[in-house]
Length: 453
Ligand SMILES: *Cc1c(COP(=O)(O)O)cnc(C)c1O
Image (cartoon, rainbow, N blue to C red; front, side):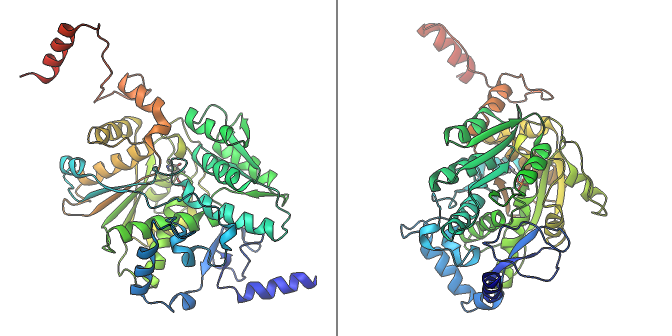
């Protein structure tokens, strides 16, 4: 009892803590095993008191972050930990589990932008990361906190998640790096081979269940009720703290000039909530003076957020998510729904959807200008194309598309597209390899046919 009181007093003094995202009173230590508000059941959020952060002015923060990015002084070279004071300020250096995540290329899509009529087009290549998706940004934070909890004698013995593929790859890698056991729940037969093999290779306990993602989520919630296994899904708001750095990093890369639009493919809605949270913090601390408009892009086969947007967010729609090429966003009951509605409402945002055919064409088109886009990035590009055609995104607008994973994790999608074998897709830009005899004349004739004179 005494120690509980002491720990409560400590939490009262903390300036970074969990609180209810719906506004119920109460502070909870981020080192406690707690995911939802004990009063109303809403998700928690990590809150940073603004006063201590205002001891540096906007210019000082910008300089500090820029001076740290990509350096070798532990742990500041990581894009996430270069903003440590805005993430989890009191983690001990030795408990930070980082593999230099973040600092990803903000790719100027010059040719694609010109072809689509938005020359100021940029693709944030979050898939150029340790496990090939933006999920690394959140997992470095979550696993670091777990490492500190374990060092302080917590009851936690392992971490667990349900996943559409990328979350489990990130959790398994960071857990293996830290030497913490990981339990992974995957919907059997619904993730790519590359995604499945990552946690297998990293030594995680991989359990493939005969259900979909939403079914896996129910099981993992049940299993983690016992506080010895720590829940690593994005309903754990520690993940959001890492993911929010992507928006701050984009601003640093633009020398703090705010883009007009940021388009992101969404499933469980943690990513867009995180983007919004980062921008809000920059506004509150004066680093920027306006918000970009956020666009949530959904697959038409798994579109509960789009349906909710259409009814003006009057109620939360859920759907049974259908089979989609954008398998990492095949989610019918998004956990961060309420946070994401705020992200859309407070940024004059939009939710739009793309069909299988649209997402595949958009991805293939982008690849022809030098990218190698995953199907989710295809969803975002297809949605952007619709908004350009509708005149919502103007030719002079500065537009960013968040590319959430590396295309190499989805080679079946690429191969199927170019061999014209994908379901619900008519390949517009197929470019299959041609098989020829090893004969110079035959080769010359083929080149002649293709390039002409
Ligand atoms: C997880 C994921 C998303 C969706 O992120 P949410 O936070 O679930 O909305 C999009 N694209 C890829 C590649 C992902 O792995």
